[in-house]
Length: 427
Image 1: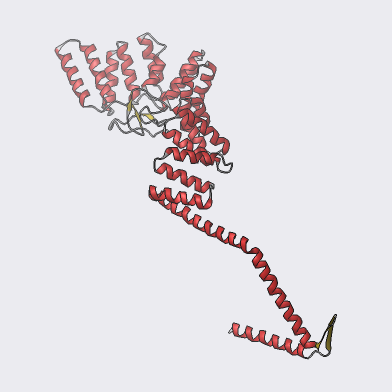
Image 2 (image 1 turned 90 degrees about the horizontal axis):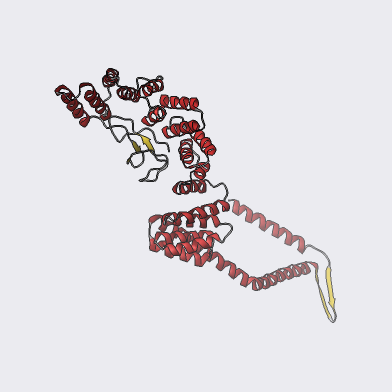
């Protein structure tokens, strides 16, 4: 309805304009040289209007002819761009589907249609990697490196290839170049930290670490590798501050405090560490300065004063009492541990030693030893260092797992029921 009304309004306006023009009075005389034209005013207006229309048509025709080559190029360029966009989409779909042939073909088609843009180069490189054409992918990644706006993408691809080849020096250099191309990138910082850990550069890894538990692990490793005593003490203190319950950090800090003559401070650190997480390594460090068995027993009693009921505390006191010849005390503590529910192999082996020392080579002593050893054979496993990632047992603590190379994954297994259960992982 609105359209009909619009047409009627336009027709009315045209008719009104024609009526007005037709009613104009007078004549128009035009003389050009020997030519003379005489007409009425309405006819002159109509002729002038027709002249404008013809001139407009001629100008548009001339413009069309002059712009035809450019318009053709623009149309062809748009067509290529649309085809290139379709090729990029097809390449992405093929990469996601793992179709090597289609991915490589569509990536090459996209490069032909759109040129070497960051998008097409990255698609070509990833298609090469998917097809195990690492040399081809490396060539394309280097083309990305040469572009200022996409250098980071090139460095990232080359870095991934260097890590896959386990070429650590090249990977470290590429990681630093990637950080220069995009300062502050979280991924680059994480990769640099992993590479520093791989190379055993603990100080650099510590500077790049972001999580607090991992900082304690790396600071402990850095202190152990540091040759400057003052710097080693600073790193050991940092590790202890970051995680006061980490046994290697406790022991490392205490040993360096002793090295500089701060014996009382070392004792406090060990006592606090024993309160938070009793461990045989802490006990060994605390008893190291003592050579007299009686003095070692007294030191053990002082160390466990804050938590004497813990299994580690009872084992330590019993062992030191046995060394000092206090057999009745050692037996009393072991029996208390058994009553409290401890059933680990080391407890029964310690009881077998007590039976040997107390009863000697007698029939009763041999029977008691055999009974203790039978219990040891079926008892719960002793706590061990174990990787919380791959579950491989270790004879000592390491900043990274020697098997799976996971940083901060070596933990002390304290569950006496299962040898594979561990305390929460550090990372």
